[in-house]
Image 1 (cartoon, rainbow, N blue to C red):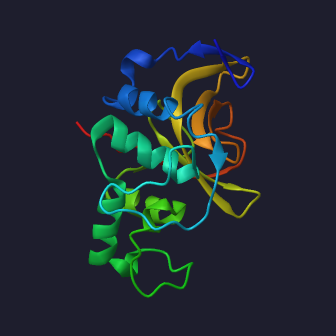
Image 2 (image 1 turned 90 degrees about the horizontal axis):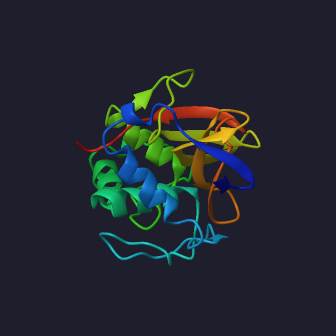
Length: 189
């Protein structure tokens, strides 16, 4: 099988991957070929369960849609409610004085904070498994997020990732392409 021009192998530890990882990965993978554009424009969204058109989005939308499609989990609502309760725990990078349910869940640093507050943070150095969420800095300053796949690249042996880094949702050997800033595992039982 090919992903981004790479020969892909099934991940050898797939039988031991975290429960729920298959559903999350499958939901992310279904976005490939559907989400074909990267569009960071601010958009007013319905609430709850708001989304931009599936043909476009950013890296966070891959994660948001995967949780929604796989488990019926609305990260828009969950992040918004947590930010209302603990606004001071979240980054102030955008000069906000209050929450904004249209965009808060679509910002990587906010998802990182929410995942940490849920106890989902794991060591970056080792133990990557399918279904893990990774965060990184592209070009040293642009926050990025995606989902670790259950497929392995050949010949590197790296697990692939499913993300949108500029050309729509895709699956590729990019887990170590940029400086990693976080690893999280949050899968419902």
